[in-house]
Length: 460
Image 1: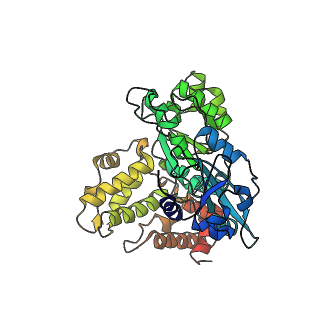
Image 2: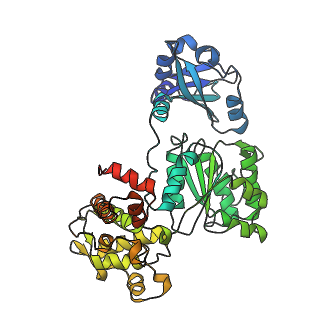
Image 3: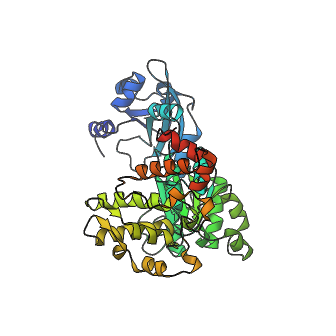
């Protein structure tokens, strides 16, 4: 049994207010951070009911503590407390049962995390661009316009789209823009493990639940407590686990494998799949009621071949990023290599484009990446006239649909995508006689996208 001095030393190492409570919710000890918040010393409040020291809206007995004691797992909730100056302080309260208390009589650890800074940013700062999401094509702009709605709700979200379109990137960006961003983002591939192991991975197990289960293990749902869990390839989830997931969605609780004690969780569930769940429902491979619960909000990630203009943007981004990662001076793509990339259909979408650029950066020795530095599939597609090799940038437009200046190759001395984009906008406006509607159509953008970029670059 640890001494009182040792326990206080450990409590004081936690950078938040913290208290140890007994079974009657009376204070056993508090750390120096909570002393500063309340204005009381640890000696003064020992044996006093926690609600007499931490003035909040929870009261002496509350669902937070009861939930933690009944489930045996941490439970969190947000609320306000009165500080020693009698001002309200927004707090996140986390109650954790102590199965092996370090001090006699302590059964519950209470952590108080000051949310003042987080809330002030959330209330005063407008939501910025989605982290990691790049694209100025019409379809990507539609997703970015919907982004604040997706981030400011806890409703279930289903992200569909072909493999490699960036479903996981969008899910993580939504998490980081939400109120849950201070808690974990957990990603689980539902098609990567057999059913027995996947159940343990998601929901955890207790000691002795199966051969080799030598200790209790928390599942991914418990590890994501307070945050977001992203279940990718949800269409591959076995039917028995679909029933258990439905219970989590409805009741926010579940039984770990081999346990008779329920665990309560507070997580947002985002799912992703490249398969058509409606077809799986008709085939009896996916539960219809689960499909309805997951499909509250839905986003379709477009394939790269349908994202006009985004190929060049992504190439520029990956070229700089990968060169930095491998400590190599960023080069540039030759006109011929760029033409081959724009002709390629990218069946693997954004993930494949990144791999292609990584391959090219590694095999090229000079500052210019030419066709000889591209992988064979891209070169083979460039030799073919098949429709599948249609260019991603719609180079087959009729001459009258695209102003002549835009058909010229971009300047080889351009140093960044911003510079390239400025020249494209100026060329389009010049060819359209200053008509922004015609210029936007020539660029393949919406009018609002062109207006925004004109303001961004100071061209109007």
